[in-house]
Length: 573
Picture 1 (tube, one colour):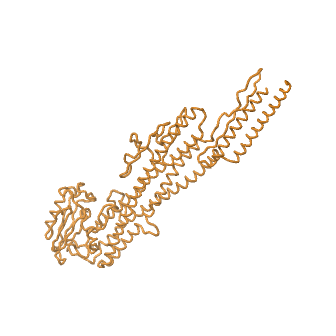
Picture 2 (cartoon, helix red, strand yellow):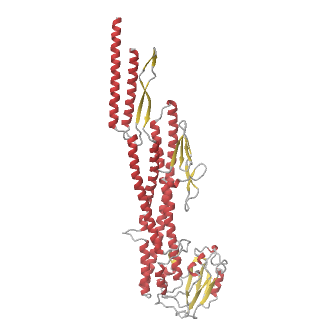
Picture 3 (spheres, one colour):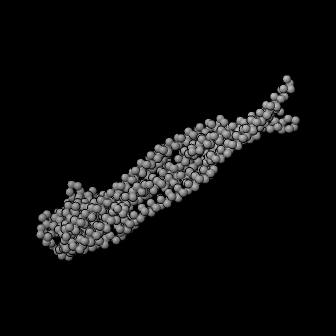
């Protein structure tokens, strides 16, 4: 029996020592990120049976369990995913704040206000050269603002696109790391049949790091099998095998998407969360939307204002007018897609008048000459023929394919265009271009501000009134005119500018709210995890004392058993 007591005490000493080792490991990792507190689970050893009595054989370390809540772990991964998405969106949107102007930096809205105010001043004094120069300068400001804003947004798009590639590289490294940890866990647990707690913690950390980059879900199978998938079920890791990501397919404008490298299949739902999702949404749905809105604004501003300006006249009339759009198919209809003229589709059946003057500005004939346009029928060559038939002018295509209308030593002007031909081909236009990328002041006005239209030619007498302001007043009213020449919902240029700013502000506010909410949620979830899996040094020290006392008591049993054995042996002597 003495031997039994010794063996029982020895098992206790060993078990208490092992429990203290676990506590020591906890204390050592009190500041280790992602570490889960481990607990030594003790159990009685199988008893011996003697004479129908069951004598206990002591205690043994049954297992070392880590404190982990799988539901909480899943919530933390989801939170990390959505927090990273919101942070990426907020940072990306804040990065283009200067594009939309601020209290210190006038933006596009200010440029438009200044332009129409300048035209108001010109309408008040149409013959003032200074006011014409002011209108031209303000027009240049608008074009420059649109060009610059678009360029900055495109740069931000390209930066976001490069960021996606950088994150894909990080994803692939983490996928390899998770697969490697799966192999180590399988080997360690297969050899000992006990959980590889530290390796599992490392894998949880790697999965959480991955969730900050893209949405993922884990599936724990039987016999330590582990699957990692995208939220839409795309297999990423199966035990030690990985399926890495790559760029491919199409997504957004001129950008590639994210695919499984092995088969080129797009990763579904990758834009719903994580840094990659945030960058994709920022690139396509935010920055891409702003660029589209800017292009739409530029297109409607350019064509709408040119419609009015082409029907007006400046202080002086030009001796030669050249279209700023190039003809690519002279034998085709003026509105044909083959012309590659951005606003050709806006041409309708109608006409415009050509007025010819001598060198002194006196009309050659009263009332001008009608040039008729039939949508889908009238060709560029036919328009040129009609123009050439007008006494005093010739029309032709130059080497670049531009329409040239030449009055020789005389002058030429236009009025009453109901076909939109002049605005579409940018004849007598104020702006050139059809998007924020290419809008600019027309070459004619850039060279001479006297050609800025304020008044209009009298359609009956052909007289030009340099002091008139009919066109100037129409252009001033145009700022509130709803237009949708690019297929967008009809809206005025001022409303389009306002909506662009409001959309941006709304997106920033939404991203900021998302980040604040997810940050608060992260604090709450981490506090819950700390309560369950965190290491409390005070509690660990209490547990250490408990096992220390048990160790001391077991040692006392050995000491007592040894004394009993000594007493027994002394009788033999």
